[in-house]
Length: 198
Image 1 (spheres, rainbow, N blue to C red):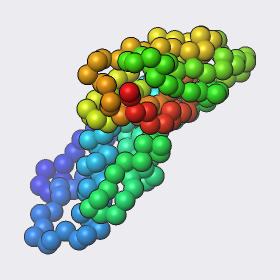
Image 2 (cartoon, rainbow, N blue to C red):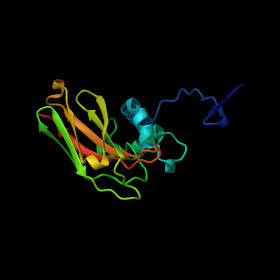
Image 3 (cartoon, one colour):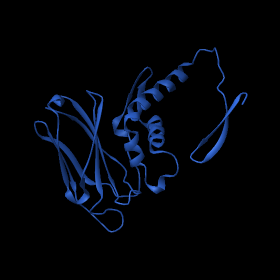
């Protein structure tokens, strides 16, 4: 409709202006922001479904989990000086909510090609339940590949994960969080750290 376009998102109708075409050269600040955005989008896009699950806690409001995670990463998790920018994986937040974090979490390659993640099975009747699902997200930096595992509960206190032979010598980043049986509560994700496989 002329220079504006109407649309609807999440039951909200709105009108916005069409972008203006400009011949001006982008400033260094603009190029830095575009590079940050491209880096964050490339990293988070493959795990949109996990992020939407991770931010499904009813306290998180209407924005999608992907959008919340993207905004947080842009504001807190991109380091370096343009154009040499990179992601600080310790600042990536996969989930956020009212459930209790897992306590005493550790991960290690216990045998060649076998990971074990362990934690203290502490429960209570308010925000840490025995049957809370434990969700592991693993990122293979070497191969630029994500894996997700959801086969343990808070009370299990550990889970093991066989790895492909092709992962030998690769570098992994990991995050873990819990989800409630009703599907509307999650915990803040916990960064496991970097692990270089033997």
